[in-house]
Image (tube, rainbow, N blue to C red; front, top):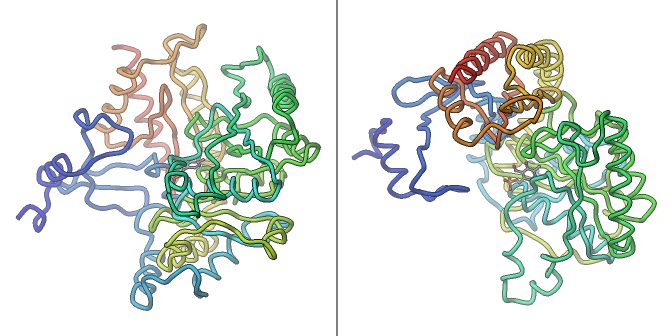
Length: 438
Ligand code: PLP
């Protein structure tokens, strides 16, 4: 029986026969078989090892199988594996308290969800109820999750206060390398992007806009580190027009950028923060919304029409508590900042100098993108076929990458060592050399 004696071919065959995968044409799939992992490493059933420079979907911030988090999940499983969200649960309270401690001043409560998408859904719901307005402005270059229709499709009356899949308006966020504003400098990009956003707000009717929703550092869209002053400018626009500012920290939060939250780099305080992924490294699915005091006050005396069966699931909560404690005890955020500034950032800059196919490298902490182009002058993105060859070549050399469009995203677990980063840099170097020759 294949399920009792797993090996690479049997696990692969089982997957291909029965598993329906996300974001894929099923027939073209070729999933990597993974048997186990520890820290920054993963391995398959044949003993082949991979250095994980993706942190999966940029979520295993503390690395694989952290013993303290595994033990905390086991202990919680032995005590109480599941409980309704309406109960009071010790680990849920401890998790919420820690998340408030990790947030800037002025945040009061945490609403737990199962993941990032439903965190964003609920933040939007709160902003709409709080402002009595409808529209949500978000950036073209962003990713906020893959739900939206479930409650509108719901037939029972819980649908009625939630028919929200409407009123979405998009704007261009800053991206100097491919500036929509013909900007030449970060200052110009910042000023023009803010002018553009002000125009959109004015033309969409400020009195109808509930929320401005942005990733603090857009991740999947290309690690688009905002220029100095941009997020402060967005905060000022939100204040001027009475709009709720939601910063999405699902991917960039919890140490990824070398600060506790990415917003700590900018000194900007939003009204709502969405989180998931790194909060417990995805050991058990969890996400949520951190709610500022005024919005928390608003719901003290008003009904909140939202909820999930597994909101604040004890196993997920125990994983959050243990993860945040391990991150603090083992100085993981500091490690991310130091390795990013001293090893990874300079190493990637050197790669950009050596390889004509590197259009730009950008990032901070352990959150970087290598943007690959055919030639630098026209910035033509490398094709999907070329990127697939690069991905295969990296895997062959034992490096598990995160590839998005024409970019390699470099996002190892925060426990990565300087030696592991050097090893990865040498692998990127080899593969980019090979790419230039092909
Ligand atoms: N927000 C951001 C910034 C994300 O990067 C993601 C996922 O990549 C999401 C939301 C959605 O999270 P999930 O896939 O956990 O629903």
